[in-house]
Length: 248
Image: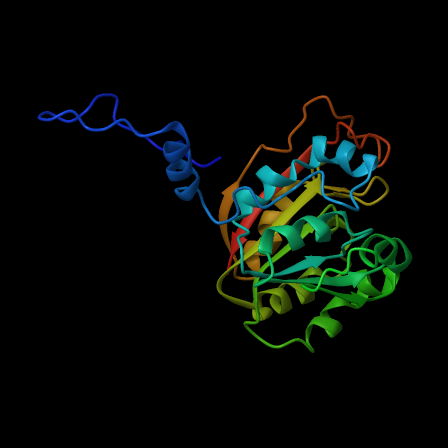
């Protein structure tokens, strides 16, 4: 969270300074916040009760702040599912930004959410579920280099069949200094394909091995009560998740 603005506790020596009205002080404090502050409305039209339940364990406001997603950015929401994340990103990057909902494998659910909203800064690219996770690199290869400020993916990295081919493409399409944000359901070691889980060190080794720099590790989405023997969809309200930030 952004640090609170500091204000003097007493007037400076000399003539008494006029007292600043509370609203003026508050306005100054708000102006000192980063561009993303206050732009996410978790009660926005189109958000369901299920979305709001999901907020409790996805913590989108804090998560996107950790990754550094800001107003005006061009962001790829990789494997966007039903558009839960895409809608929040659309609010966050604003009208000057762009959200590429890429490798959308549940178009019907995505379209059901997005069509009534008419979000001008969202563009969906549909790729079949199995195809997307198997040959994503061949699709990414068609995208222009250095065209994105950030790529984020939540509980999807574990399903990539060829990360060694995908990661160089993700790096290529990011601008210098671009962000790759990954959150995923944890296991103790390796990949647990049956339960769709992956250990933090596997992600870190693969991503840094592709030339990214590890820029941050957060325990924001951690939960020691999680049972690693269950798939994340069975324990979704308590799933223990990695939260990693990489930079090109």
